[in-house]
Length: 181
Image (tube, rainbow, N blue to C red; front, top):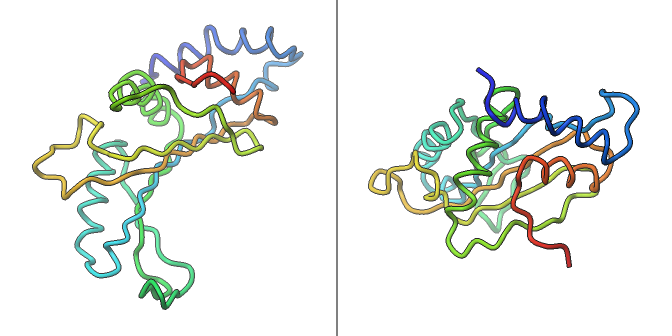
């Protein structure tokens, strides 16, 4: 089932970006290709059971099964060996991606304490990274069952060639950016 954000893109945003950015072909218009939600779990080095709880919560937040990420290198000072679980991630595409983005833009970000907008900085290739300090802003998480507070990283990958195109796309979706300084 299509989300409101996906229908909004098809009906309004695409035509708006064609006019604003001067495209000649509909296929040139940038779109969101995937959203990756990632949580680093440093406690997993000492306790393997922690990763399963975080995995379950990330699955509840995104509506898709989470995958455990493993260390690529051994780092002695962190007591980390190659292959140890160190995080959890989910890659969202298609309908789930749009549903998650809609929830993030309309419900989650406004619920963040002292929220004044997200940074308008992109990575130089049209992708956007957003960090949330506390996962408790998601309504799916029960305060009593969640083992503490964790931060998470959300990466929005677009097909835009430049940061300006990606900014225009996310701004048209309603992403609450701070004013550029």
